[in-house]
Length: 87
Picture 1 (cartoon, rainbow, N blue to C red):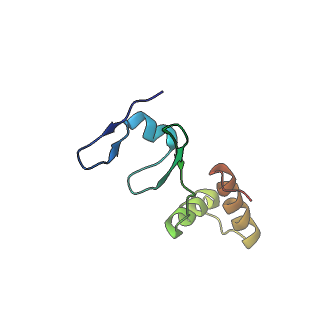
Picture 2 (picture 1 turned 135 degrees about the horizontal axis):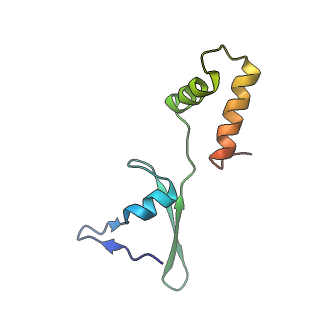
């Protein structure tokens, strides 16, 4: 269990180790679900891939070669699966 602090503005301050464990970075969004009995659950919000994310994935996978559309789709599907976004 991790204890968090509520600052004077009502914002919750989460320790760096929790942020790392959630895999989020500044600007990312997290979901907070308020549960019965004064409890809450926090988790990562659904991530949206940006063009820069896709470009980076393709650059790494291409390793200097030109990819076919099928290979591009495989790279994207693999990245979605690793990010927990697979359908």
